[in-house]
Length: 526
Image 1 (cartoon, helix red, strand yellow):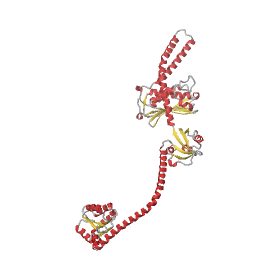
Image 2 (tube, rainbow, N blue to C red):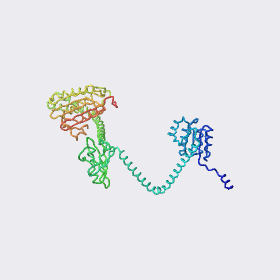
Image 3 (cartoon, rainbow, N blue to C red):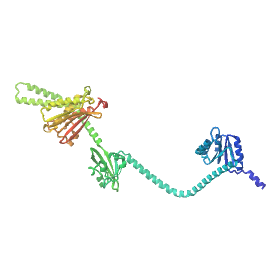
Image 4 (spheres, rainbow, N blue to C red):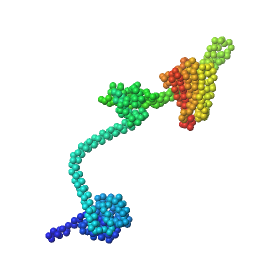
């Protein structure tokens, strides 16, 4: 027995738990230690919150008792820090009778296990501390049971883990692929749609496709034909490549015209399926730009050629005209000779006018001739000159619709008056049997002013429209036109930063509108 007792004394004493006391009054700490020493708990003390936190980190107690009123950090703040550093530690607060507000705050912030009022009852203090250790032990047991349960389930989870991982991986891959496909589909600026071939039904479309149809992507139908959804047509579009693509099994292209727009449509069939991916590319502006570029290059080339040819012709033409005039003045010429010389002179003068037109066509107007001027006044002056030509044509009516107060435009009024006269002359020549009406108007549209010549003539056939501004192109009979009038007018308008717009209907007439920029919006001044 003596030997066993000595061995027991040599061993470390078995404690029922670790307890931390924090109070700034030493006598209270001593009193609590005295009361709790019979509980066989290992107790450490601290006289302020900062020391208590350092002891907490080192000592790692299961139960912490703190006074509320302490210098610096009070008990609520201290126990809140304890909660953050040791969430499982049970927290007890010593409070006075006047600390009810502190009690409520502690409940809300620190989740206090118990409160002990000063002065305390020793038995109540011991029972409270004992309950706190039991509560800690209960939580610890629950944690242990939870770990046991987790360990028991681990084996089953391990058996299912591989399968779940494979399923999850496959799901992620499929989801990623689907999302990437959807994003790629919707991010394309080219309108795309998956179309069912047998009835042209739209099965899926991207955002650009919905924008062409002027609808939201949520409105994309699943059984409405593409020609109805996209263009409002009841029948398939002429030129649609889908039937050809499905028949050959290869991609096909076609051009579709709708609402004045041109679309290049391409269809790519799915292998072994009744569906195809159709793309729609609006090439209206591209085609217009191509035509303008070709026309500009052609005009530039012909202008250079015209200038050279005009200078080369001027000299011999002047000689022909001079000799014809001298010969007609010789005495003794017969009537037939004089008539022939008159024809030579008239033909030479006509050639001279053509050469002058070529020279005007080949060069820009001079900068010194340009100024700010009233467009309506310029157009009115041209109309006055043209009215003299109408005196011999009583069945031709000319109406003016000139708007006052238009912003002044910058340019050469003389050359622009030439454009007005040229358009009036063309309109007059288009009137059948010199009978009909010519309308001359001016106005403003946005940041541009315009003048327009409208006739009630024969109109222009669609096949001729792309060529009307080409040099030497004319539909008039031989001897009635050189084909240079509209070409020169086009060059003059282009030189002023303006544009032409032609609206025509065969058998009803034509309207030529010239738009000129207002100086405040003009970006390029000569």
